[in-house]
Image (tube, rainbow, N blue to C red; front, side):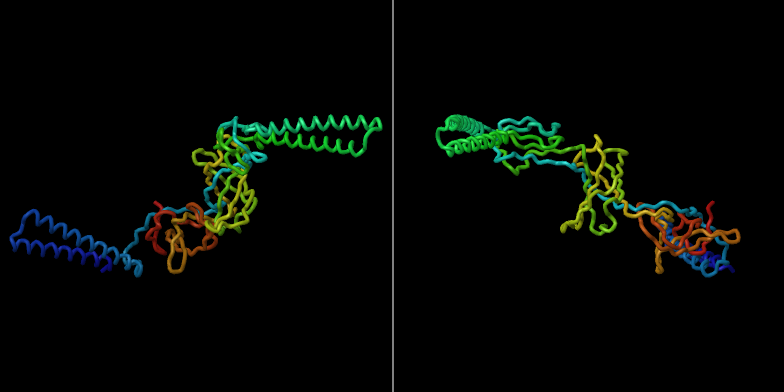
Length: 387
């Protein structure tokens, strides 16, 4: 008798005997209530489920050892023919948009108290535009004094020269008078520069990104209370883990997306790679120049994809089809022989993984029929069908 049929008959006999025994016991004890019947039914179903599982396990074992025991039913699967494609791997990182030209405005000279502010945050400015006016009372007085002294020196020099032209006086007096004029002219120039230093100008064309200085406050050299940003020249700065330093170099292709800007994709290349590893994050800085775009703002978040690997004729498979056993990585393919299609296990060597695709470096070839659906529970040599 067929081995699997015998197993099934024994299971049925066992279940029947359990049912008859239960009924006999119940009749003998006089317990025929509906509640007891429900409990008996639940117990029998639980026993039947356990037997079904055991029967199924035995069927599989018997089929593996003796495929002729019963005609095998093919398992429904989906097959996909493999073909060479272009495969690219990216390093996915998050960066930040920054301005190429950023300037912290600082007063020339010793600074002073702000008497007037001519710009607000967000205002566009041009190079050379007046931004702040500092207190200039002392500088103006110094300028007046220098002008007075210069006038006196010039008058004295004119008198000395007039006498010298008449052969009166000493030459040294004329030379000293001329030197006095030169010194006063130099002091006047310095006084004029000091007065000019009370005017604070923009050193780049851009936008007032931040201004915290107020009228009446002291504005000193080195302060960072006024910042200008040129938004016409932007860059994306991203921190790259040090493990990728061999793959990321100047000229490496990059794709950049901007959350909040739908369908905004910018392509470019790495412009600068940092030469110092941050000891805290173990990363190095990379800069990518991006074209001027009115929709892109400084300090905006950027999703950066740095291309570190590409292959023009690669075989790729869905990563979920890759399986592992004690011998390594493998996939299941469909092989047709004598009009029947069976599953066949193929050991593979894998390459790069990106998104839901993984590159296969060896073990498969173009045209192989990869089982992409229904491969769960399949074993090597099992009969399969696609309809």
